[in-house]
Every structure is written in C-alpha cells, then in structure tokens.
Length: 145
Image (cartoon, rainbow, N blue to C red; front, side):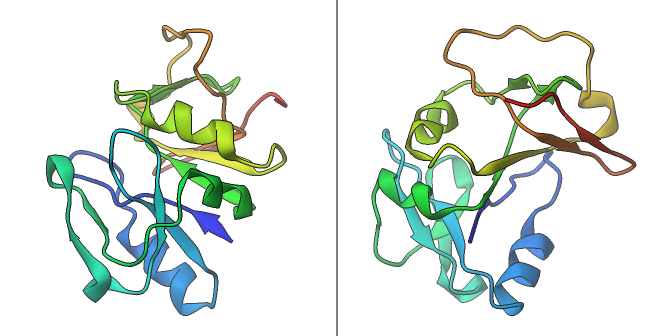
C-alpha cells in the first residue's frame, strides 16, 4: 500500500504515478487536508474534488490519521531536500504531524525538481527525514533513518 499526494501547480506531477499504482492493483491513500492529518482511498480521478488551497483530494470515507500505518511507501511533497534525507516541507507541518502515525518501517520518498536538491536546508526538531529523493533526472538514496 502506498500513500501519495495530488501535486499542485509548480510541483512535480503525481497524477500518472497515482493512477498507475491504482491500475496495477496497489491501494493508494491520499490526504484529506484538514487541520489534522486524515486520509482516504484513491478510487480514480472521478473520486477527487477540489479541497483546501485548490488541491484535489478524495471524496470517500475518511480513515483518520492512523490509516497511514498501513502504508509500505509514503511519497511526500516538499520545497527542497538534501542528499542525506532532510526535507523542507511546504510550511504547514501537516506531513510532519502525519508521519508520527506511520508504522516506523515505511519507506519515504520526496519528489523534487533537480534544482530543489540542496546541500543545506533549515530544519527543525520535528522535521521528518526521507529515504529517497527523486527528481526528473536522478534518484538519490539518503542516509538511513
């Protein structure tokens, strides 16, 4: 099972990834953007509707924050990342809060553009690291968590 997100304008596209996983029989969790983390199953593009900040989200039953514990792999958005796995989120802390509900051994990937892979970024104690950075031209395995 995979947790992913629907990219917004200016982010690496995720629609093809989500749809490909779904068509392959992989169950995909998508965020339901509320003040606290929540998730719902992706059931196809017809099951998405615009949510906060214009980001599409699933319209099905909400599963709560603990649903993330089912994920083997978690794709995360971000503004930047470092080769050792530090991630600069988009500023709200939603994913850092959500990741406290993963099962601990789920792999985490960060989708970026090449110029968003940096040597240094500001991080705080609550910032959650990732295992893999993927850009349009490279995949970087990060330091083990």
